[in-house]
Each structure stands twice: as structure tokens, then as C-alpha cells.
Image (cartoon, rainbow, N blue to C red):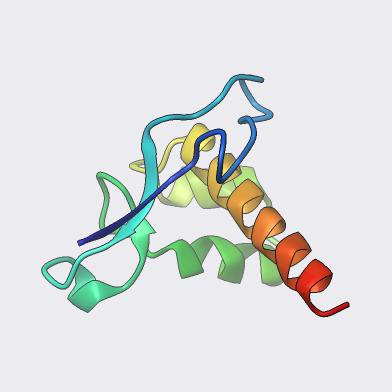
Length: 93
């Protein structure tokens, strides 16, 4: 099982609560959804969040449709994605 934590090394803070997150945010486990990356404690694929946003839906709509995902988890996942994109852009220089 692969767990990705949002902490001082991976996501500086959760902007929602303005404090470091130390709880696992997302993970991948072959026993859950065939290894698709999901929000910890749920069977909700992280891809669903990005699909909703890409379609123009709001974060609140996503959270309403997937109540097992907390706002803190969703925001942390977006912050992790933002950090990964920044690192990718910086490595391309």
C-alpha cells in the first residue's frame, strides 16, 4: 500500500485550517479499487475531484456528491497537485 501524506515536506499547510497536515490524504492499495489512488478512508478516486473541477463543477458540488471525502482532504490533495506541478515546472528549466 502506498500512502501519500501531506506534511511539512509534501504540502506546507492546509490553507483551510492554516496548519500542517500530518494525516494521510491519499493512497493506493491493490485491495481498494484495484490500486487506483483514492482519498484515505474512502473508496473515492482522487481523479473524481479533478474530473468535477475540469467539468466546471465546484468543490462544494464534489463534496456534496462524495460526503466521505472531507473538505480538508480535498484541499490538501489540490495543494499536493499544485506543489507537484510547481516542481515539474522548475525541473523543466
